[in-house]
Length: 265
Image (tube, rainbow, N blue to C red):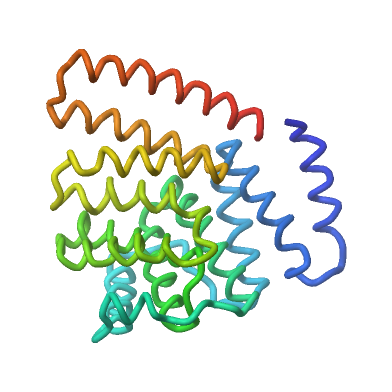
């Protein structure tokens, strides 16, 4: 891609004296371009700046264990008494400013995982609480799936983590959720379900996640799904000849997806 031309056009638009809401998609492009170029600190600072400009409370970048525990307790309190059915029945999020804020948080999940892992749970917790407070949208899939990952891998609460993963998958059945399918399946199958569900059951789901990513243009998560399927084939003790065959096929697929991702970037 013509990255230099794109960045020049982005900077020109962002210099205009217009509301941040009108520049949001350009900021989103700027953040994604920085992530694609592995400039994660730049992506982080830009995302935090945009969120502040949208009028949301600042997110601390220096995160202590005490802060994580406090945010976790707030999230548990917000979820108290709510069933899976209650959450799935929440109204759709319609406030455009909050939708933008949740999208920025969605991007921050990926960026923080790379640059500031202690920030990752803070983002997840706040996204869950915003979904409960303001309504459900595409970003809620990320909110509940990553919360499930944290409950299973960080807290050790497999039952509640499984419930959050189930909620994320059920949200995919709502209209407009298709772009989140590949990413959500990847999060749930490889960060939640593997704790309690036989790996054999993850194989068709990972293939579904791969196909969903190709259909929606989510090349990154399509590749993650097919790669993790390859690992799980081995762990499931499939015949080695079958594993080797699929590994070779998947290696070629991932190479093609990497080249396509680079071309689009």
